[in-house]
Amino acid sequence: MTDWRERIGRLGVWAHTDGMAVADAAAFAARVEALGYGALWLPETMGRDPFAHIAHLAGSTELLVFATGIANIHHRHPGAMVQAANALAEQTAGRFILGVGVSHQPFVAGVRKLTYDKPLATMRAYLEAMEAAPYMAPAPELPAPRLVAALGPKMLELAATQADGAHPYWTTPEHTATARSILGPDKLLCVEQKVVLSTDADEARATAVGALSVYVGLPNYRNSWLRLGFTEEEITSSAPRFLNAVVAWGTADAIHARVQEHLDAGADHVCIQPLTPGHAFRIDQSALEALQPN
Image (cartoon, rainbow, N blue to C red; front, side):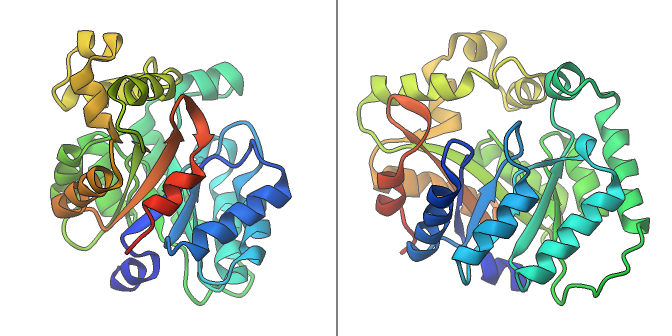
């Protein structure tokens, strides 16, 4: 994984672009590259197909690596996932990372009406099926690494044995240290960190609460936070100790210090998600400039 660590650098951006017109999304990707970030991580929700979107955005950039953070395994047959990943890896000349995950029961069973059962066993079988899937086009010169959106120890163990690494989301430097200890030294560890560039504690924490609103009821995240030592009361009430741990806020130096904590704990790459103060689901593009890599 040494080559990928060099390719993506230590700092990337995690961002929703579904709220942008496609031309604006392309301009945003170009700006992320111009600011020196190594990778742009795009989620899969209920908007654009991330693979088709990345294929378009890659044409507006030259060096920027694109990653799915994360592609939902319930939406695609393993063979189709292999096809999409290989095609993008080839067409972008090796500028693609495949992040995959089991998503959440409310989205899979509730919204999509698909079966959601035994996430660990489902992911294990899916990765095995990907490995066995035939692919008859020219192989990409640099295949896309496969990262698992892993939170718990068993999913992290699976990422260590059957994938190229992990992409934890909504976590802390303490979780990063645990993830590295489970993954071992050679696997790629790319962690997401939400940030609010504001020294107003009330504003920053209110923004964090807004960001948490769509996640706090999801068992996968809630269980992860409980394992990290937060109480049900702290999570439910959005206690300052909890908010300060999962969302970095303050000056650019303070946010860089949090990023460094992840790196010191074993992360190879931290993708920041800059939340606009007072508007949790709007990308703070001014923060991207203030936090750009040195």
